[in-house]
Image (cartoon, rainbow over all chains, first blue to last red; front, side):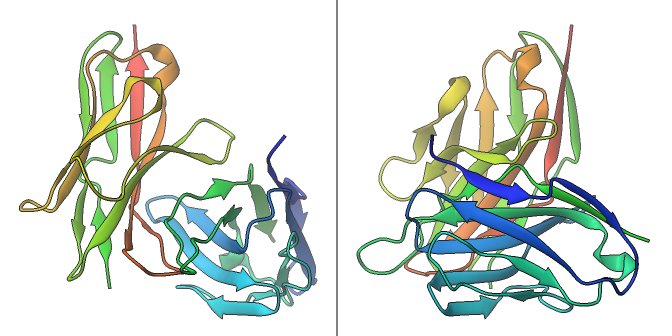
Length: 117
Length: 114
């Protein structure tokens, strides 16, 4: 079954304790992206990756890191979480066209709800 | 940069009634347009998309949307809703030919009741 898998689905942590949210897709997609969803703000892009070892900032990258060492995995790293990073996080992936563009047909994971105390 | 405005944060409707969820976008260049649906405790899934061609696009579950370039709108419609359509709906836009950026609206919560 084609899917994007995120772990953990739920996490409560404390300020300053490093954490990683993993994301894995089994569809051989080049493009992967992280979003955070907050009430009244919709989804905002944190980071994205066009392919292995190619990553770039989205709209709200502060306080986050990513890596893309393998095509299927795109972990989100919070080096020193703060309460304003309490949110619902989504990983998404898609194919790129032969021209290297993304048509926006994203496949989403089920989300990771993070609470930072 | 492009942006999306979803004019209604919540839309209550009775079962079997028609519904329209409104979406307006802003962009100085050509765009692709999308509607995504998010059921409770789930990720988003693509409902329908406009890339080019016919301005009336049909999606899953009986939904359709019409691209209106002059009004920069992409409203979502369904002639008769079901309880199972209760969900949050997101309009999204990306520039044609770009590789990275899909901008989402703030979402419209559709609440269908008996």
